[in-house]
Image 1 (cartoon, rainbow, N blue to C red):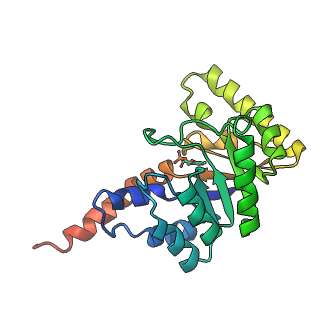
Image 2 (cartoon, rainbow, N blue to C red; image 1 turned 120 degrees about the vertical axis):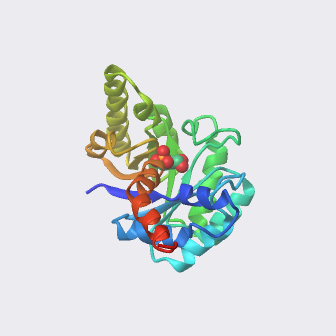
Length: 239
Ligand code: PXP
């Protein structure tokens, strides 16, 4: 069965809107696990717009759950990673001005830096280092060369496709990359932009072991939870 890593960054996005304590991130993580998440995924961005250093430490120490830390090559993020030692580290590209991780890592162009970071993470005890890449054979080859255990295929092009020909072409690209990666000996994960409507065909791709999904799940949580939240508040008001 495909594993589901639930990305809870946007629980922290709501909290950071007030720089307060609600919603509580650990509660969010526990509820995700209760719902069947196989692991918790968080992205410690350089600008700390949602997840904070203390969140990474709290999730690691308070929860007995598989932790996947998405991270760019920033030295301060690396310091957190080697001290917290997540079960999995996913190396992602990052630009401060982007709304979300817009493209895959260029492992070919940044091979030496990524190889060094991968080695440091493995030496620190991280059991699975994954490269978030576009579904391209040269990126997969480079990931294998630098010693990554896994690739995470960026599914953004598939998720953003609006016509059926582009959907089919990007899905075929994901399938080819997944087969190529499995044959090359890396574990294959995928994620980005997946939602309740488009997840099925990607989940059906045999070599894909794990999907990381965030925004759609947090959005759905608002949709399915808002009635109850309002009713609970209404019950506290004067009849
Ligand atoms: N995988 C990676 C590597 C990501 O950077 C993200 C976004 O943080 C996701 C998966 C989840 O994407 P989404 O929030 O669109 O489901």
